[in-house]
Image (cartoon, rainbow, N blue to C red; front, top):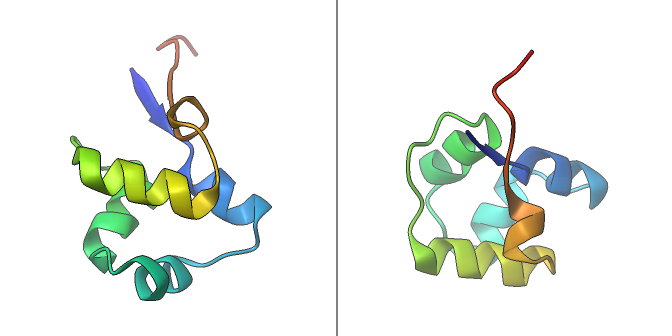
Length: 69
């Protein structure tokens, strides 16, 4: 299972979804789905934009998590 760390990255930088939406132009519903980990896909351009904005690597943003637990 792929885990999205968007909410943790926002928390670490004390940012809100609204801040990211305003600064990047990415649709709020896209950001909200990433934040709540309900998205099933992400566009490469969106992923690149978010990684640059949050100053992180793709591996920081997405990770493969065990489905145990």
